[in-house]
Amino acid sequence: MKLRLNLATKPLENKRPFLAAAGTLGAVGILLLLLLSHGAYKSWRANRDLRADIAHWENEIAVYKQRQAVLQNYFRSPDAQQILDRAAFLNSLISERSFPWTKIFMDLENTLPAGVRVVNIAPTLKNGRAVVQITVGAANDESKIKFLEALEKSQAFSNIQVQEERHLEQASASDKIVLQLTAWYETT
Image (cartoon, rainbow, N blue to C red; front, side):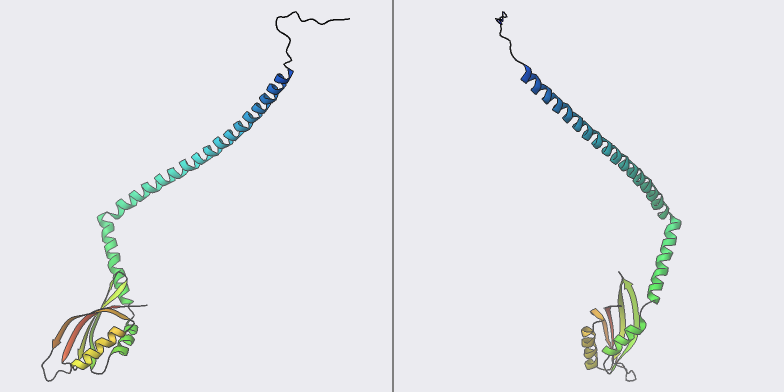
């Protein structure tokens, strides 16, 4: 018969479950560390590429800002200002020449009552809209009032303002009243 006696001061403890659990947790920890390290590396690499793209675009922006400054300095020069002023003048002449004269005469024909005639028309362009200064002659007050009412009802003319009204006393004149007015004209 064999007897097992433990002569140690402390009894022998079984540490196998603890070691197995600690080993499993350590393996899971190492696996998680590898996964997190891989994720951090991918994130760092993506950020590196993003930072490189940002640096590239910032360099391009700086180059374009420098080009813009050079162009602004050029366009501020007296020679360039003179050319720009000349171009603006020529563009205004072209836009005045492209004024729809036939359309305005057709619109005025529809609004002119008997006894009223157009003496002068002077269009100018302001902010892309046509301001027309019209001088008309009327035989009497009744035809003048009919003309102004017809002009106000017209779709083509708006913001009509009478600038001056003169009464002529000459017996030979066919126009007893001369009106000068301005109006916005819709060219479209």
